[in-house]
Image 1 (cartoon, helix red, strand yellow):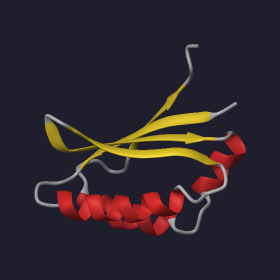
Image 2 (cartoon, one colour):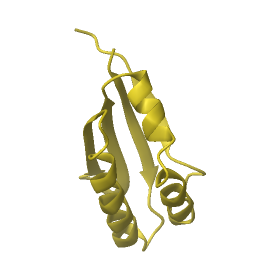
Image 3 (cartoon, one colour):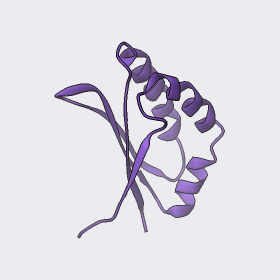
Image 4 (cartoon, one colour):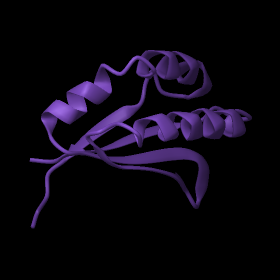
Length: 97
């Protein structure tokens, strides 16, 4: 079964460009992962500091491989001081149909 989630965070005032650069670089790496099917990054139209990342992995094993990727830790360490939350807020999704 596919593993689907939404990751959300809000860039601190004035860090939007740096956050966008970081997530853009990270997205290139994640999209190369064998088990990654979707890694789409959005900002809210009405709140451009609010970032939403829609992620889909082939299955739980592919998601676990993503979590263990060597570039994830450095990405999160660089991101945390730039966002309002303590970390990305993850919402796991189940398909309806």
